Length: 141
Image (cartoon, rainbow, N blue to C red; front, top):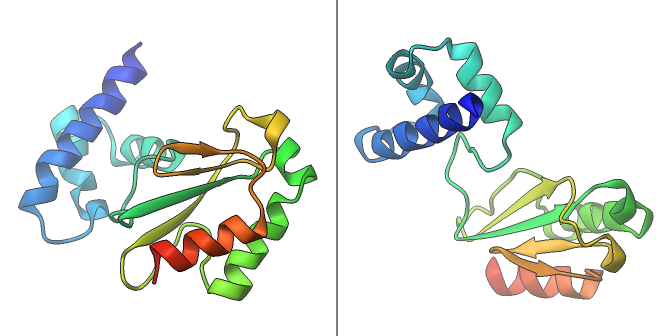
């Protein structure tokens, strides 16, 4: 339970500092650590462990592709490669226009319809190359 309050406290601190700092969130790390009376390493550990913490703002749209075993066996890695090779978008990156961020996620609980993805919080089953292309072209054009 203590870790939950720590994570919530960090997110609140980052949100408060977002408007006050013009620099990336990673520069807020020492401020958050001091305010919560924990080490910078502990803050960094939580930020790097929890996928929804970011050191830079996400794009207007966020596409998460599941890379867990079931989705890998059904072609998720081919979709990741396609995003990189055809659209120039790597995992963890945002398009230059700031419209689309591509992220890895390690289980969306939709294994029966793998490969799975999530676009702006909406679950997508049987995610394929055509849908990937349509999303990237629509959301990052």
